[in-house]
Length: 478
Image (cartoon, rainbow, N blue to C red; front, side):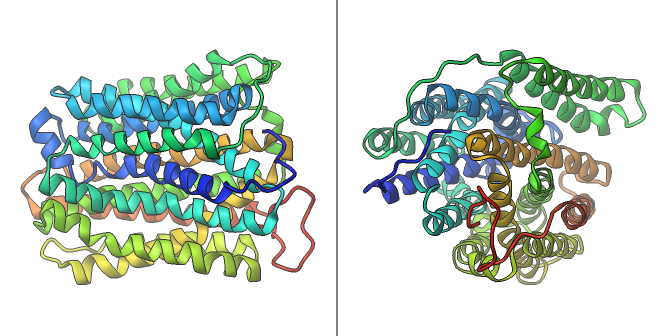
């Protein structure tokens, strides 16, 4: 990552708006399709199990290529890769919106994921270039950046409902095109530049980690149909594990790997990334199945379903921007990460008691607000800890790793909970009782993942200093 400029950039706050918009958009694209899924299923002919691949095609490409995106950002400059990512994102959005067959839709979604994998690490690197030398401003910048991610996830649900209700589902993809054009027009004048560096690109590492993730997710999603005890399930799963092991072996031997393995010896880096991974593994299945519960069980329309989750968006933005930084300054990061993950688990557990004849006010709103509070408390402290744990010159790598952890958790968590929900009846479309049983099982599984994340954070994270205490060299204010 390039050394931050000595003098503050006069346009750094405008640049931060674009960086936050980038984070908002790439995460929004994981959730905006949620409300549109039932109509997409009918129009394109997706099976109930295959429907999750509209999400997974994006997240696998996104998560699997983030380390490559970070490496390209370091070599060619974050500003250039940031812009290139938006071009790819816009192209993938056009393909996904025009799709009339399943394979075309999944191709467009994968292209969107490739664009996101270029945008996300470059955006975080640009943020650190602009604010890394000013700890007080960095705290504010990280709070806005952090709020953009879960806010994008839940706002995507609302926007998806509005678009699906009043336009048509292809517009959940087309919306990215004008956003991309605005960002591409403004970026050249507000984003900091960095020189091109010499170095190699580890394409073998990028290929093995992406294929390994895709294979593992495919095995989990297909398991309810092929059987958890079948040879096919375990052979495909073992192939995915073997590919990921090959990735680790490649990283250990290359002079310029995508991920220097020694970085994991940095205190708190592993613990913070485990927290991000398990947080995403619980959070993403929640909105995915909550959307389906609202529409397929409670009978809400696309707009009403999106509006039903709007309170979560408002709660997350307020708590992340206003409350979380103050609590971090007083108590430090570890207590907030553990408490937040426990609150997220409690919200998921509460949702697991949803009834087939339930109501939004009783069965959804209180539990979803508790889950949002947990996400708000845990997200920024774990993100800041992951970034500040690495050496300053490896900030770009640290940003790629933490983004990868979140997206891998998203993909594997949704794949696992899709399998669980199908096993408990969620594949019985039209039967509210069976659907509710399946969704409840997914919520309960997500609660378990968040609880494991809280325990892991408690055991692996060192206590970070609160405000006023001496911080280690290289740590940021988050």
